Image (tube, rainbow, N blue to C red; front, side, top):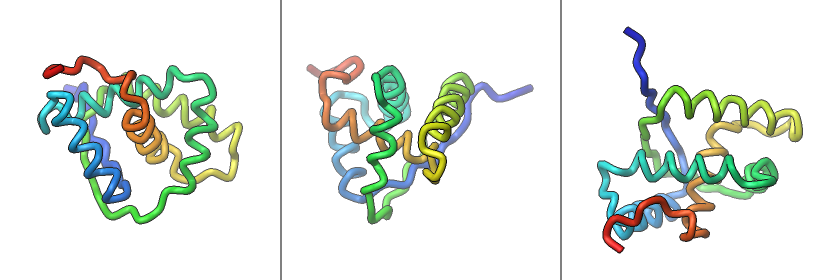
Length: 122
């Protein structure tokens, strides 16, 4: 039987990880909802016009000392792969595109609270 979900590891700056965890709790997801929160962030990013440029700009991030694992669907993985190809065509020298998509998604969600999914406790 083929698994319907996959695990993805996201490496990010420690400060960003702390802010993400704080926001996850603030929005009422709890750590069991971390994957859902990240999935919503990725979905929102991939719907933005010009998301390829945002992923490219994430090149400025440094100090990757925090690691998080999230569970994503095969469908989302396919969308990330297709987006990575699109980004690769526009920015052929860009490395680590999948990781950049996750980091950019998280950063955009932290910067844009209006894209928050369900805000359980608000």
